[in-house]
Length: 120
Image 1 (tube, rainbow, N blue to C red):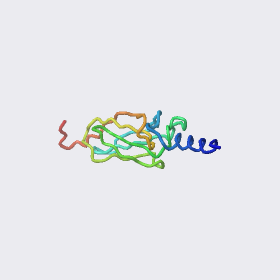
Image 2 (cartoon, one colour; image 1 turned 180 degrees about the vertical axis):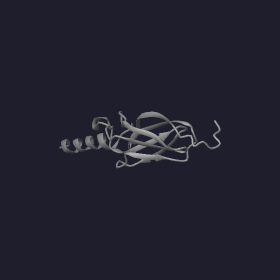
Image 3 (cartoon, rainbow, N blue to C red; image 1 turned 60 degrees about the vertical axis):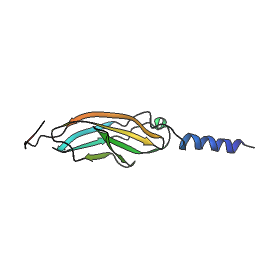
Image 4 (cartoon, rainbow, N blue to C red; image 1 turned 30 degrees about the vertical axis):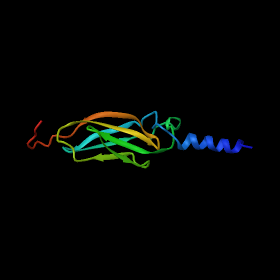
């Protein structure tokens, strides 16, 4: 009698109640500076579905000093702006589920030197 209801409850628990983000990260395919104060990052949608740990709802793009932006599933690139000139940044991309942010894939890149009054 409870067979169908128990199965439905199990499906709901496995797909909607997650306490972690994905256990794999998307791969950053390109990361480069576009100016002395901006960076551009692109990633692959390559997190295996069995590593989602819930329903994938988007991505988090983060950079040095705990700054980040959450973007939707359709995004695969992001332009990071208002950065320091000629500064080394660590940039990461991670998948997000309703349970949180998952494993991060990170790389380093430096903003450009525009040659104007550079103070390091």
